[in-house]
Image (tube, rainbow, N blue to C red; front, side, top):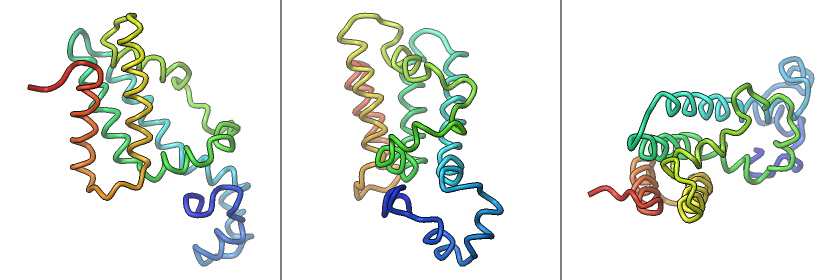
Length: 166
């Protein structure tokens, strides 16, 4: 419902009606609407932290491709969640429940990973464009099945960061 009507356009009564329970029952499980939004987005944050941990264990030329493949997996797996996040960015940013340990600086670390550690402006810009573009593309309503989207994200991202597959 948040994706269809927006966070602010969806009431607790709407959600309760949609899941066929009373508003009181819904409030027994979630203290407020913000808690529901946080619960929906929390798995994304946890998976980003896990990807960051996997990348930290790699070295050299394996890092950029692993970062691209990991982000592609997340962008496809969490298509609806990223759409929800992008459409409700200001509301989601204010949620203290989403402040996971390890999330701070993760965007920068993913850019560094995709840039292969290069500090050259064109490498950093390409990596940043790639990272943002992958999540935005995953959230778009493209008529592609998950595997087709994943492969297109990977191929295009690798080409953008100058590491196209043979």
